[in-house]
Length: 250
Ligand code: APR
Image 1 (tube, rainbow, N blue to C red):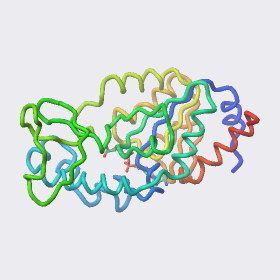
Image 2: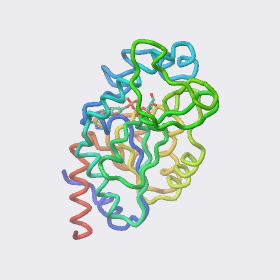
Image 3: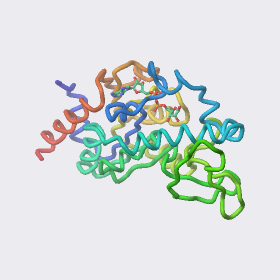
Image 4: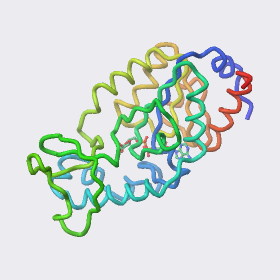
């Protein structure tokens, strides 16, 4: 693919890179997205499965869904898009990867500077007192298989951000600060529909960053991007990595 000179020049001069990824980046690892045809929200009610109210109403159903997602994420492998991002990180003085994904695949691909805006599906904490528990347990067919907090006997829940909940303040603050001070921003594999994460590319654009979108489909952000690439991330990111290496003569 021939990239525009504006992008090539920006690769050559950029010192601080920010990346926002969404479920589309893990699609080529075999994990479902949320809003594509056949995605999670076309099959399930998000408020039943991904909200505090839904969890309190039916904790077993919610845990069974997250257990199934945990198992699929464990079986999944990082794809060439994850791996290319991990390599790109080494080619710039500052490289920050903010992900909406909870599957842990960026870490498994070797990315170091990763910030999980929506938590991590393999972590758990007490719904009542907030104590963290990285225990590995299997949820069965009975509510008795949901562990209780040894400290306060509250229900243990997945450490992911649910609808109606706040994102981790420190990570969100860093994401805003980085988006507003970077030279080059990539928004990859996200429908750009869920805030505040979806605000980050607009923040970058408002402060003069060059913003690249990678998504096989158009999004509500597409018209604001300096470059919007209608490709799968697993296919185009390795080509972008090669281009960066050519420009930086690596
Ligand atoms: N490469 C790149 N993008 C892809 C690919 C691919 N191979 N396949 C699909 N996509 C794009 C789709 O076109 C879509 O725009 O990925 C996007 C996925 O959008 P969503 O399913 O809405 O996922 P995401 O944007 O990550 O959702 C944000 O919503 O439900 C919450 O907490 C959940 O973190 C999630 C948040």
